Length: 417
Figure 1 (cartoon, rainbow, N blue to C red):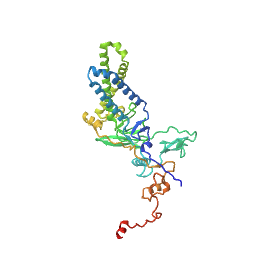
Figure 2 (cartoon, rainbow, N blue to C red):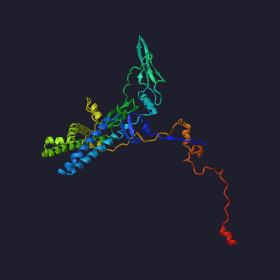
Figure 3 (cartoon, one colour):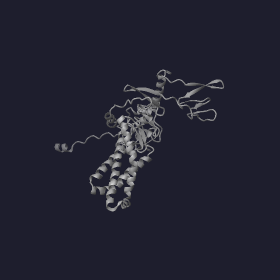
Figure 4 (cartoon, rainbow, N blue to C red):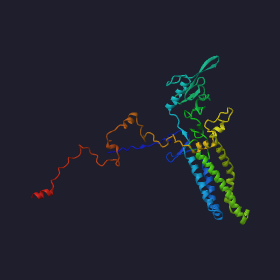
């Protein structure tokens, strides 16, 4: 008798997440797709520190102090730990709205504008357009988010708006920005609607065009760490650039000391000829020192004001309106404690959550099969079980032979005799 084996595949939620991210280690590691510059960052840090530990540290530990390589190793390990923590973590991605949620938001927007009662579908939007002294109505397409030009229509099969002349879709006008007013510390803050994620973004959130996700408390997208910098990894990013600045200064300074000590014995030119690795380290540290230290100073300024890079570039709190930053406590210590020491919110993506099971190579289960699987059922027929899953005894009570009557004990019979 043939045995049919049914294998069910477990699908994690990270496999179906939209956006331009890559995942590793079964969804535990989350990065952007563009990781080339991140590998360059690893190469520069690992290469420079390897040369420093291999050549200069042994000489300096003997000539000056054995604490020099120990402190350098501590800075190196801390920098690498914060870099990997920044690169491999969820920066605070906000999940996109489901189709039902997006439709409900659309109805809420229409209800707020007074165009439709709560819970009903919005009416068609129409614009009047004059052609040859005649009024032509331009209808709004809720799928393409445009007012269709004259004689254009939406194809339900191709799911595109097509002109009647050459089939090309014109550059339609983008719908006006949808804004909600939200009050924070007695100040009105605008919540903008994201047409990609179909949500009203929370305060200080923004949509990253590289990762194609809305990120909470979005600071910027950093290609050097291969990830966005947001609410959940900003403190690790700041600690990374701070420790990297100290490490760069440390390696650069002791390379100069190493060259100076060697020059006293064999001369400057001979030292450069014998230590080409030291020259390479000095050049790398010299050119990276200014950018890393300057970036650390800039983010220290932002942390002290409780401000993000995105807000600083846009001039959200320093523009013509001179609007006061509602997130600042007016105290540098309180701002630093909130940004660097505040509670870290959990990820809302649930990357390793399990989606409904799908049978490989078979049709998806129907609604009735899914609902019936939740009810208690009798044992499955044996033809659907393989040899490893077979119970030891599969016979039913009717098929089992009747038990034999017990034999009389032999000891009692001999005693009677």
